[in-house]
Amino acid sequence: MKIGEYEKVFKALANKRRLEIIKFLSEKSEATVGEIAKKIKLSIKATSKHLIILANAEVLEKDQRNLLVFYQKSKAMPKKLQSLINLFSNSLE
Image (cartoon, rainbow, N blue to C red):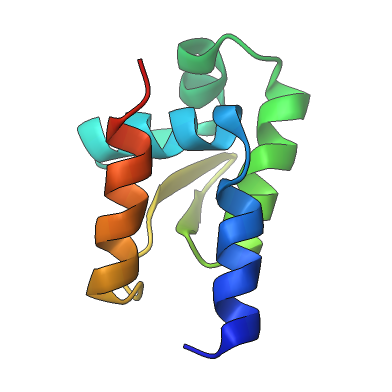
């Protein structure tokens, strides 16, 4: 990854709600926007905005199935960066 790509990931991670999303997806391999919104106690609209930021930073992948969009942690993320993301998300209380 280039420096600019790391910067984009770190900016995406610099938010408590987005870290909560990552933590939830670490525990549950994939989830819909509605499931994620319910878990982090946020509206679907606000949750969708956070998910878009994480997907644009390639931290998450999305898969549209009919009317539902499922999100999961990116499999393309370098292992060292994935370890760092896990460290951040696991440190949440």
